[in-house]
Image (tube, rainbow, N blue to C red; front, side):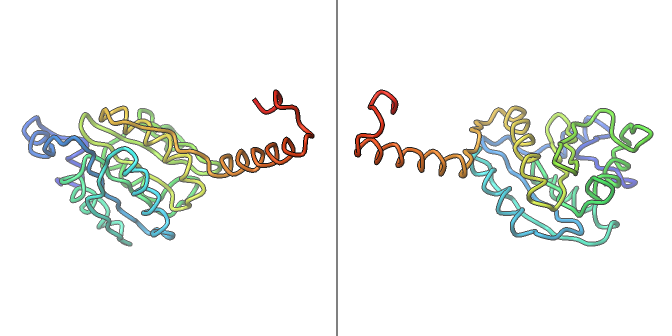
Length: 201
């Protein structure tokens, strides 16, 4: 890292880009950086589970509290990973980590402070972001699992597309349970002669 920049995401030269580029791998290596975050165990489990579903591996997870450590630790994880999930507490509708990362990337921002060329991940009330380069992705998420759940689905669709990995939409356990309940009801009603067989097809 030089002058607070994220060199792995915004390389200054072709040589620097090649130096920071990880070896090609059939799977995706990813790291997690928790910054002033709560609920870290649940979020780590969630991310790890979704990584496994696309054949990815978790190269490491770190937790920090100080902003001065943020960029250094992010670069450290990017050296060995093609994707880093940055999970932090949220202020003003977005993760605290977003602003320092945007500043280091010299991202173009709107008057409201939103990035103009970075994919925004939408939750119910909060936002996340997915800055990327040719070979790397950073997924910036709030530490609220319910908010991050939909953002992770959107992020993993893009990650799978970028790195040519298989992605299968996660089944909704609640929908599966409801389907099973209705199936049992139909079966027992049919056994009692209350539902014609053609209604069950």
